[in-house]
Amino acid sequence: MTTFRSTLRPVLIALVALALAIVPVPAHAATATKVTLSVSHTSVRKGEMVWFKGKVTSRGKAVAGAKVFLERRTRAGATWKRMTTVKTGRDGTFTYRQRSTTTYSYRARIAATGTLRAAASTQQPVRHVTANRSLANRAKSIGARLGKANGKVRKAAAPGSTTVRYREYANMMLVEVTKPRTTRTWFVTGDIRTAYRRAGGPAGKLGHPLTDPKCGLLEAGCVQRFVGGAIYDNTNTKGTVVYGKGRRTEVLAAARSQVGYAQKTFNHSKFNSWINSKGQPWCSAFMSWLSAASGNGTLIPKHKRLRQLVADLQKNHSSRFGTKPRVGALAFYDLTNDGITKPTHIGIVLEVNSSRIVAIEGNTSNPATGSGRGVYTKHRSASFPMYYWYPEY
Image 1: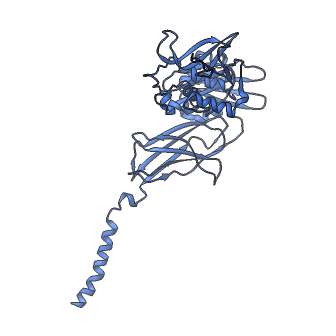
Image 2 (image 1 turned 90 degrees about the vertical axis):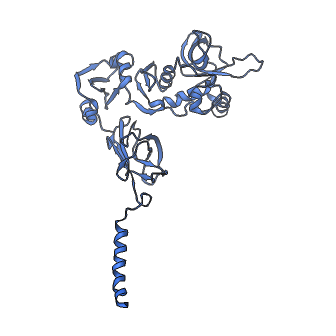
Image 3 (image 1 turned 180 degrees about the horizontal axis):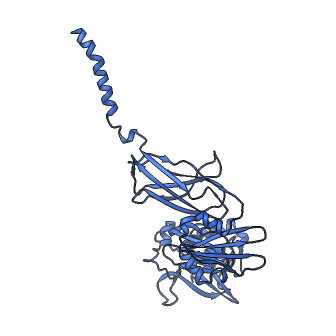
């Protein structure tokens, strides 16, 4: 009997080991979550668009609705900083596009949840180079995203020694800009292209683009600067044009795109929701939204209430106040009749006409009806504001 038991023991141990080996490992005990990331280009010129694409899987199956953090850093060992947050579609994939400003390494990351383990993709470096970029070279770089070419390469008049050539494709317009020492080619697409064509394209008042569009903004927004202005577009607009110079045109194009927006109920607007100031007056929140929506960060500081914005500007940017109206300036009004002199309303100056201004204002009455509250243009005396504040455009 003893001999039989001693002989059986190794056999039992072997059988148990085999059974454990073939039992499926619980999902929480395995590295079941995977995130991938790819980039359209590994070397770009400053101001060119990069397309990102990736996928989230768990145990080999696509994960829909997963929150993905796209992060970047300038060098190895530096802290990863979040660029944006996206969600995967039904097939587990996600896409994003953004204009490149400097050399970065990118990665996609997901945090641990009740069903997913934390995971990160491999790094994807995108290097900046300074070589010229001809129209033909850019067309080859963008590839199938352009679609089929429509017509031949055309020329457009340009000031000084600048030469402009452009070509239409099914999905984009490419515009080549050659100066004495550089050649760059930018694309114009979507509703921005439609608005650009209506404005005369490269031969019109806007002139040639200065960069690719800047996308990934609020409400899936994009903005693009041109020599003579800017065009802003998002999911709720169809390309809004503002003529002029500098970053102010980006902010003003975003402002103009919102004209006609009406609040849902008293002090209940999308600008309240964005800044988390439910039930509060939102003229100041609208100004901060314009800065963020046009891709200009906190150029106009982000505050929930007008008094907070005023206090910030007076404390940290007092040298930028004045009494002269300028396009792009913030105009502060005292609209109450309570005997206390203080700003109670704000707008942004769209036009200056002799002694009058045209301002775009949020949480203001509809000039056509005199009632309701929304975003509208107001014609006022240039001396009516208490003072103006000039952002660092």
